[in-house]
Length: 493
Image (tube, rainbow, N blue to C red; front, side, top):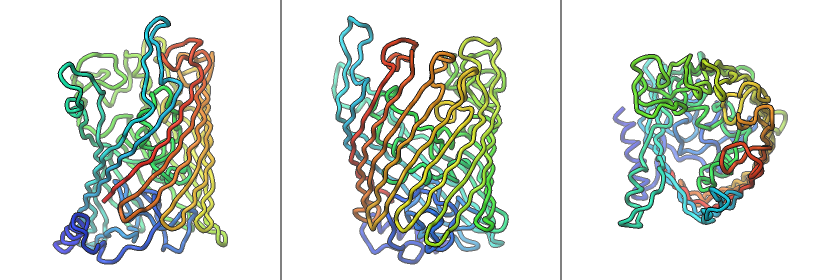
């Protein structure tokens, strides 16, 4: 164990002082940039499996030790029997961005002066990934992983200073992922806590093409686009709507290229020890605990508060995955079924009635050399991003096509998707929502842990008789569009 701690200290010293690197006591291989932050269970690097086979040696909360029944020799430190590996990874991003949207200028009333947005801004973040991986003397693998993110509060004016010091106090840290795991090569892996389900672990951004910049329309750079002009990216993989609810996940060993997984979340709440504030959907104005059954309780199943009806209960994800080759072409494919209940609201006032989740989710990519092409589909009862369908609303469907090419330090890609859903519950029986998004991007590895990222996004949203500017029913602003052009510098360790 002492030896492992010394290896971690050596790696940290390398990052700080530029010494020759040591990772897992071997020199890591040269790898393409911006591969998935978590990879499915893999065989040796020559086995293609439909995706680039060598992930980043610098990994996030999901790493090569905690996403598959067997540890993966991907350049990070794998613990040996009787040892523990402690890691503290992080990343810092800075990006100048240029944004244009239909909602950059807005009048609250026809006669009021307009509020306007500048097209240019700087965005960025810090994320921290502490964790531990270990192997018991009997071969049982176990560990824990955490993702800590930067929170961003509103920007407010001041009569005494125009600086940003006061606004920085609303920029705090919070826990995004937090889970423990146990695994055995022949039995499978079980993950428990606030982490990715089967959708996130099976897709991992591969068939939704989120790995050629910061994630396309599920990326990290579009924070300056007004919220109602920002597209919904309906595919739940690698989105907080899928991984922040506390759940139990099981993934089997791989047999003849096939494995299966199942996940269960009793409710939509994150990992907690009882409510200390009201549900985000609650209309109650004060902070409360769960002193009696009510809107602030994470295990709520029935309520009198209208918006509690949008909370799911008893979420189940179950799926099959295949990884193999046909000659020089790698194949990666999976299919997943999702179902849930919902909180019952009585009396049934407007906006309180929803259906449980009930949809299919699947994807497939083919890889030849450095080129990966494929797509992803979803269809069934859902709305937004893993949100419940308003009762009486239409079923949703979405499809995405993408391509990615990796050559040396450069990875470039493109994706296009169309998403049709009910959208606003206010227009049930009146109109549905259609969203279309194009993403182009590239990542270049300038040096180990240093990446230059370029991204372009273009999207449109339409819903008849829904005003995207006000969030209410109305004939104006039924169509919006947005564009984002950005360049980012990312440092990770």
